[in-house]
Image 1 (tube, protein in one colour):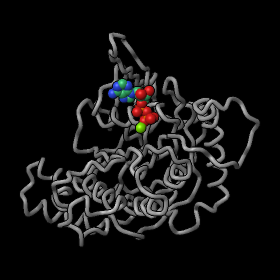
Image 2 (spheres, rainbow, N blue to C red):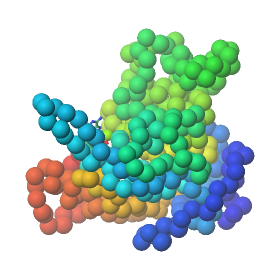
Image 3 (cartoon, rainbow, N blue to C red):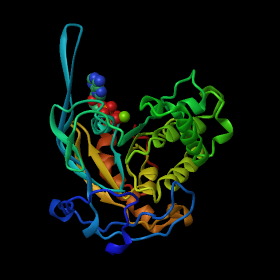
Image 4 (tube, rainbow, N blue to C red):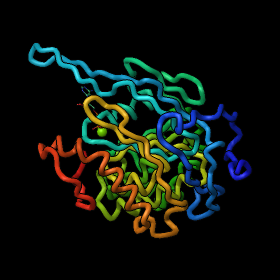
Length: 331
Ligand SMILES: Nc1ncnc2c1ncn2[C@@H]1O[C@H](COP(=O)(O)OP(=O)(O)O)[C@@H](O)[C@H]1O
Ligand SMILES: [Mg+2]
């Protein structure tokens, strides 16, 4: 299948990834759509062979303890304890786990917004310690500047990089077209719905063409129907662009729908419980992925991995296996 994998840009190929079979689980990578260009619906579904999947990001033994003093007392929380895994080029990887298990901390370490106490993050083999243009973040609360117009919000990362105004405007406008908001370039964030604001957030993250998109519960503040539309939009936006996406969510359906793999974190302290492959063909908006038998199986498997932690949090204790019951919120 080597021919099927055509990188969207000229980049040095990386050393072959560590085979996950070595870590006790199996891989059979599902394909990502190729061929579009930030486009909607273009491209051909391909199947990627595990042997040609390449490592993009390595998290190596990441640990983080938060320490603070309150009322004269020293407190500390071990948020992450020796977390290691690899993220493949062009992979859509979700991180899921109960509230407080360290998902945001892990994502912020990936973005070099906070430093780990131990371990390192490597991108294409190089240790990273500072934020860089190859990574962009999308936050749950959008993080837009309320006093700036939509266009100026999207231009912001380009202006920071001192791009001439005319070019920045042109690129920001093109990005707004890709998220369907070109008619709103003169609006201010408060004039837009939550879903539209997050599309601005997405356009701002994508405008500088990062290779890696780091998303922290980006649809968590958006109502359920809009959320489904946003999930589909995100799949279409990143398909065929060669981007690697790391997506934090507490929503099992969202994790299954979007991901190539899902990292399940256990709490106290944050450790990897399992990494699960999602065996659903792409593009997933072209069929009823949610109605697929494999979707239901993956979801049930994820829930069974998480239910112990969630029941503990809710003080519910042990329970007989109750497959198919409604999942409570995790976060
Ligand atoms: N800045 C901070 N100061 C102190 N404790 C923190 C800080 N950030 C996170 N924590 C603690 O670290 C743990 C993991 O937090 P977080 O990564 O936000 O979890 P999640 O995103 O999975 O809900 C939690 O116990 C949280 O209270
Ligand atoms: Mg969080």
